[in-house]
Length: 214
Image 1 (cartoon, rainbow, N blue to C red):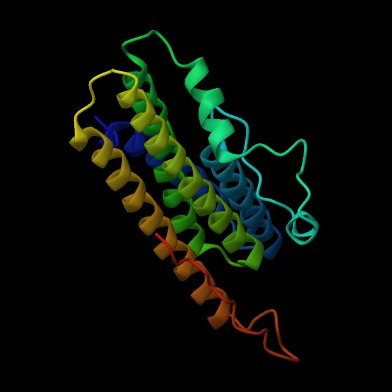
Image 2 (cartoon, one colour):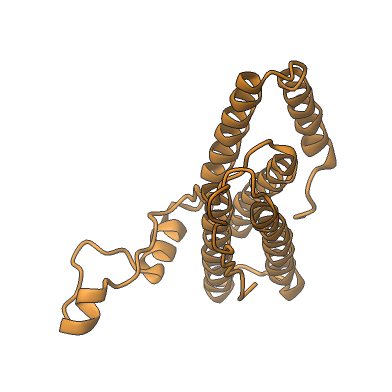
């Protein structure tokens, strides 16, 4: 159910490659800069699609709240986000089908981001912001995975029959997507480390990657 559609990704890949090829025809530096900006916009747009979710974004407890023990009144917890999401799922008896479709759409967006990020490796100038963009999307995928899994388990407890392998398929698909994006983020960071063209006087410190917890 959650197998990524190669046709959708392949069609997008062809369109993106045509765009990149068109931007790369002229070797003049200003055109190269324009190409970098266009690719960065594509990367940011793709990351936003990955971060989108059909529930309010859960927020962690603030540092001040941890110290004082006070609650953030407007904070949405993960449990509340799951409850809100479940309330919007319909029709009854087919809620898991809709959940699986939502998860599938999120994974398609993740695959699209991975493709764009991989193509960004050919960009004439990468920045740490590009890596941060991908890493933020990875964090969103981890959160989305947990919410979809927990929501599926609650649907099952409510009486809707769900095979264990169906939930496992969602978990596995998300882990694969996170791992793929993590490797791409590593490659982007490594390329930044090896590019000294923008740091003539003093080399930039090595970018510290934190992609643990797939």
